Amino acid sequence: MKGQAMTHTTRVLLATAVAVATAAPAALQAHFKLLEPAPAIVENERGDPQKAAPCGVTPDAKPSDAITKVTGGSKLHIKVLETIYHPGHYRVALAVNSRTELPVDPMTVERMTERGPYSVWAAIQSPPQVPVIADGLFQHYTRPASPQTFEADVQLPNITGPKCTLQVIQFMAEHAYNQPGGYSYHHCADLAITADASKPLDKGWPAVTGTAN
Image 1 (cartoon, one colour):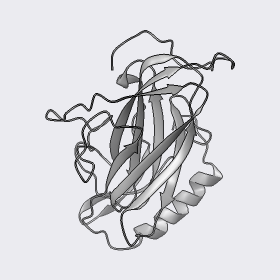
Image 2 (tube, rainbow, N blue to C red):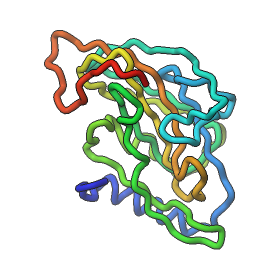
Image 3 (cartoon, helix red, strand yellow):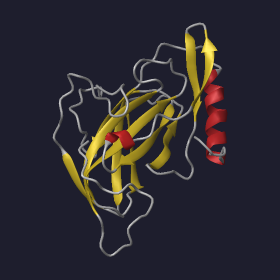
Image 4 (spheres, rainbow, N blue to C red):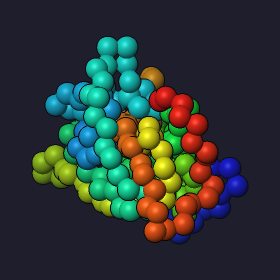
């Protein structure tokens, strides 16, 4: 990320990913489902559609019409099911007004193979910078015996936004570049956030304009 120094977490991730990258590349596809909060579009059993940034939306995607009401300044429970394993980690970001506020996918280091470019490592924000609220979640590099569920509580800013978008992306290490998703898969959830009046408002977030997603 611009102006971001490599942190200890980033160095550890880079070393691990480089070790993974020494193996011969395989034609693998990762997939995940967003279980909590409720996703903004209807997912199939593998979690598709999820490739296109910022929210996996395709022309035939069906909106779920789910809106999760939450209190600003509180913890939000994130739960994902990795339906098809791939090494990597997850990032969570929040758009207050429009999905155009969501950040681009993380900067990625690649290596060239006989099959083309493969991902090695992606930058992790530590500490996260607005609009990212959590990064480097669920780092994993060992195939589980069965599809794996990951859960965490992330801190929401104390703001009011009636139509916010929470984005959860999965960065995939040792993965071929794919269109249109690059090295990340994407899911979003619609949130209605009401600030906690007993806490000060968080500064640094865009002013709420009421712009639709």
